[in-house]
Length: 184
Image (cartoon, rainbow, N blue to C red; front, side, top):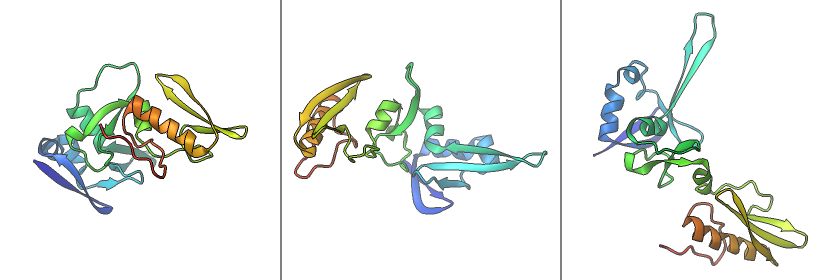
C-alpha cells in the first residue's frame, strides 16, 4: 500500500510504502524528534528533516536527515562497490520514496540522469574546436572522441546516439529538434 506524507512547507505529497510509514511512525528516535511533523521539501526537491538543536554553550547543532537516504539505508541492500554510492530515484521524481523507486548508484549514474550541463555551449558532450564541434563522451573512466562535426546539432546528435548505445535513454540526452530517443 502507498502512503502519502505531508510536507511542512509545501502542498506537495511524498509517496512511501506502508512498511516505511510504519517504521517512520514507530522508530523511537524519529518519533522523539518529530520527524514526520517536521518533514519539508528541500530547494533541490528532496523530502528532508532539519532541526537546529540548542547546545549548553549557546551554539546550535544542526541535524539533517534526507528521507530517501534514510529509506535506502534501512530498507535497500547496498551493493559492494569501491565507489561511493548514493540513493537515487529510478523515475527521477524526488518525492516518490517508494522502495521499488529507490536504488544505490555511483555518482557517474547520478550525473548521467540529470539534464543540467555546465558546458558553455549548453550542449552536453560537445566542445568548440577551431571552427568545428567535437563530440566526446566518457565511459568507464575513458574519454571517447566521437569526431569533429560542421554543426553543433550534428555533434549533439553523435553524442546522443553514443550515449543511448552505452547507457540507454537517460536525462542527459541533448534536446534536439527532430530527434527522438529509440525506445527499448
